[in-house]
Amino acid sequence: MEARAQIKYARISPRKVQIVLDLIRNKPVDVALAIVRNTPKAASEYLEKLLQSAAANAETNHNMDRNNLYVAECFACPGPILKRIRPSAKGRAFRINKRTSHITLVLKEKE
Image (cartoon, rainbow, N blue to C red):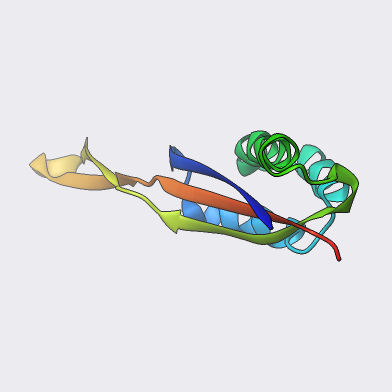
């Protein structure tokens, strides 16, 4: 049995999210939550909410025990890119890509 939670269209680059996801992969939920809360990265804000949501889904929807949960899978896929233009010298224009990501977190119970 697995519990799943997703954030779609998060306004943060998948590359930045992946750094924090690598820290919490295969860790128990309580340890992962402590790591995310004490990591000074922009992605930590998104991941803390996502981790709490996945744990709540596991408890309410699947009747799993929170003490036995661990982060089985976590990944960030790129979402649509917001393309913006920045004016530059001599009438040129440079593109700024504002990246988004879809973050997925899967919790499973230890056996």
